[in-house]
Length: 238
Image 1 (tube, rainbow, N blue to C red):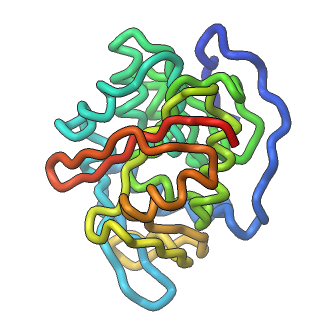
Image 2 (image 1 turned 120 degrees about the vertical axis):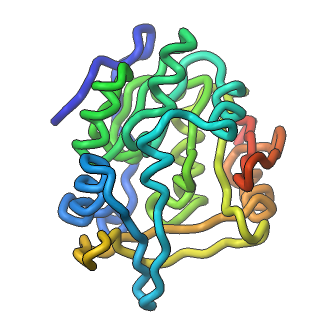
């Protein structure tokens, strides 16, 4: 397993609940994603209904933009980036002097995060993780509220990772604030080479606000910048 040392002062991992295996993409489902990260080639999300939409590999592999900066400015203390990709946010947090750790299922993403100066583990959010219950900030950027295809299940897991009064920063669906969509999809390259299906979700700002209280969070702030939408959640009592 490719890994880097987690931030100091974060305790060792302890067991965590896992969703059904079908909710997690198998390793071969990520092959087009791995290649796109390594070579900067186009990547698409292909739904099982046949529709296809481009994924923003250029933004993920580039430097943080203005919208990213608005997210980073709200991070405080030890920060966990779930689905960190090639680590642009993790590296930026380290440069700001914050302890930060990225996790991603793709070995290429972990390698690129480490190469860029960040720390990362090749791990699912549903695996045991360092610092459970101690993270001050958790990031779900780039639509990663969709991981596993069940936002409520994911948020409850994130609540287990976050300290009391900690903050979760979520990037939500840009189109419809009430969107709450769960579906199966594949990642696919420009030639149509695709990985195996996995479960994913889309969640709008209003839909997240309605879901959050049952998962242990209150909405602290919402904002939009450069057509990207964000929500800051604060962990309370469950």
